[in-house]
Image (cartoon, rainbow, N blue to C red):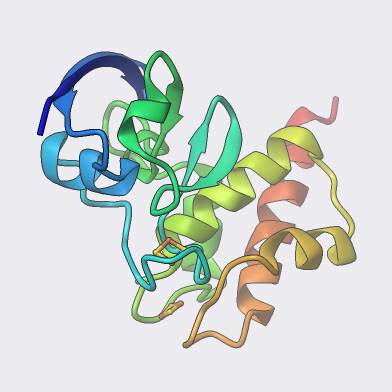
Amino acid sequence: MSLHSIELTVNGRRMHAEVEPRRLLADLLREDLNLRGTHLGCEHGICGACTVLVDGQPTRSCLVFGVQADDAEVETVEGLAGADGALNPLQDAFGAHHALQCGFCTPGFLMLATALLRENPDPTDDEIREAMASNICRCTGYQSILEAVRAAADGAAGAAAP
Ligand code: FES
Ligand code: FES
């Protein structure tokens, strides 16, 4: 099968890849670019574990072909921590509020919450629930995820206060 040459920016770094037309973005990230923080659960668009941001929008990377990300800006969970490896406030809040157990769903929830808080820095609990409802967690019962996103939002608001 013929390969397509694509250029994309992943976590701020310009990257080049040669991909088959049928190569999923999830496989491109995990296998070709060695970014295995993006997890694959159902592989058919249900669980949200594979959520990354494409041009800022939460995207199920198991439903998108790599060639569709040509020229796009992709953000994965590896891009959340600082250059020194320090977790960002949202990641810290997930830890502090026990918003993960096995952690399989966590990259997807973190990317979903990242997009939510960029668009709506002070969401109501119902807005957090609605945003997080697209992803599945089989461990936490969701309440701790809600509390973590709430805490990250409150922390960001506190840091911005005069
Ligand atoms: S692995 Fe993509 S939605 Fe489940
Ligand atoms: S922490 Fe296990 S699936 Fe969410």
